Length: 107
Image (cartoon, rainbow, N blue to C red):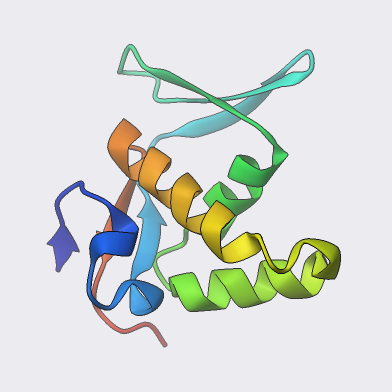
């Protein structure tokens, strides 16, 4: 079951949500910028390295909690800000229409 766009962290069970990239979006590097776009839509999302990493973890199988854990292990010096950064990033990607939320349990 997919949820409609809205704020990820306002969902009651937000840690268990499983964000998934929408099909056909492409992540491209142009000079020093990362751009996320859909070839059939007129929207481009400018991304930094953090947004790009979160985007890459949105596979519909990993929960938000697991994404936070993985990034916390990879970047222990930033562990305190990672939950907030992940939620803000997911909210922005959801608002831009680049991801959807999968509520069904993963493997």
